[in-house]
Structure formats: structure tokens, C-alpha cells
Length: 308
Image 1 (cartoon, rainbow, N blue to C red):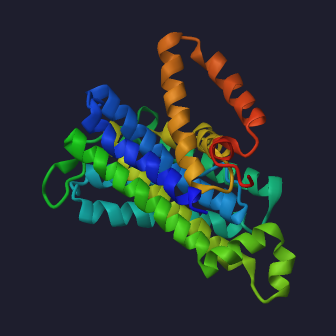
Image 2 (image 1 turned 180 degrees about the vertical axis):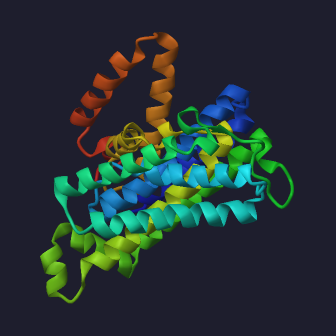
Image 3 (image 1 turned 135 degrees about the horizontal axis):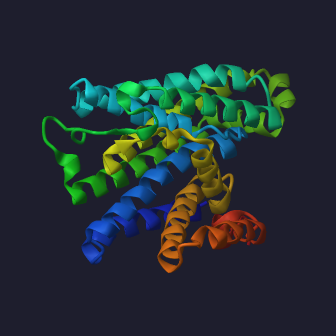
């Protein structure tokens, strides 16, 4: 049990020390920020996949809804975090609840395909928003302000804000899964009929869990659009959802901190291969597939096996 605590804390501590240990160049800070933001989105998806058994292929849509909420508010002159953050989180949560209300009534492949369909609907909706760039995307006038200060424009401050929110998302998701609510989610994942037999109706628990995961993804969307100062429909595409799902699987399904590890390795490997060859995707894809097949239990299982 202790490994489930100290290993993620070690990874978070390494990210905290990195800027003070010489990794403070603009490129390195940008790379770490992207990795942490994607890790946050992956943790929210791991909460669904490992905790509730809901394998979503449209999770990036919640990230994108949060990002577009920032863009729309920015275009209308609302840039303070006290305004932006609640709206973005609320929009992502509402999107998740509305789509989840339908998707969760199904299971297995049907659930995956419905989440994919909703994700693509969100993608095409974003593409049709001509006032916010349409297919070309939208560039922010400025990053979100914190109490009137442009804190997010400071690379070091932004790094630690991303780190703090990543740690918070992992902690909140872990506490939820360890609670009575989480135990019902896991029981329904293992055997929904048995959960019903002992007096629990899985549907409302799964729907609430889906909404929570959507809200967490919305926070990642807020950070992502501030990191790039740009949002486009590609952020909502099924390919982005597939990447998040791959991070969860690579890290280890059923272990929230594995999603953090999977995201860090995914981004690091992607960046390293891109520097080696322009044809890096021909190496990257098969390498990830082989790693998932070879590493039973993912990277988390390799670092800390469940038994032994």
C-alpha cells in the first residue's frame, strides 16, 4: 500500500525539483508543463477506466470544452481566473453529465462507440464556431489572470500551478476511489448485478463519477489553452482521446498514479523520437504497442508489482 503513495509523491517531487536543478530553459519548461497537463487529463480518465470500468473514447472532448470556455470568455473580455475557472469546469462537467446520461445506459463496445460519437459531435461543433476561428482555431489575447495579475505568463509560476493542480487531481481522485462512493463504483465495475443485489443502483454513481472526471478534464483544458495560448477543434478529436487512453494503459489500468507515469513517458518518448527522425511516428506507434503487450500491468506494474 505504501508504494501506492510514495511512488507518485516521488514523481511529483522530481517535477518540483526539476526547474531548480537546471531544467529551466523555455523548451524544457514548456515540455514539462504539457506533460503535467496531459497527466492531469489522463488521471481523470484513469478514474473512469480503472475506477468505474468506463472506457471512454471521447474524453478529450471534456478537455476541449474547458479550453473553448476559456477562449469564448477571452473573446468577450473575461480573463480573470475567478470567472474563467468555474465556467470552464462547469461547462466540462455539464457536457460530461449530458452525454454520460445516455452513454452510461450502455456498456462495453457500445459505450466506447457512443462516447466516440459524442466526442466527434463536439469536434464538429467546435469546427463550426466561425466566431472563434472555426477549423483554424482561436488565439488568446492574453493568458488567464489571477486576481488581476498575469501570473500564468511567468514560466516558473505556471510550472508550479500545473504541478499543484496535478497533485490535487490525483489526491482527489484517490480519495474518491477510497471512499464509499468509490467502493460502489468498483463493485459495479466488477459485477453490476451483484451491486444491485446488495442495494446499490450503479447508474447514478457512474453518472456522478463521469461528471467528476469531466470537471477534472475541464481544469486540464484551462491549463492547456493557457500553455499554448491557442485552441483548435483538434484538441477535441478522437485521436487525442486515444492518446489519453493509451497513457492510462501504458501507465497501468487501475492505478491512478500509473496515468501520471504513462503521460510523462508518452510525452518524453514522443519528443525524443521527433528529434531523431521526421518519421518518428513509424517508430512511436509500434513501440507503444509492444510496450503495452510486453508490460503486463503497465509501467506501474513494472515499478511496483501488486504481488511480491
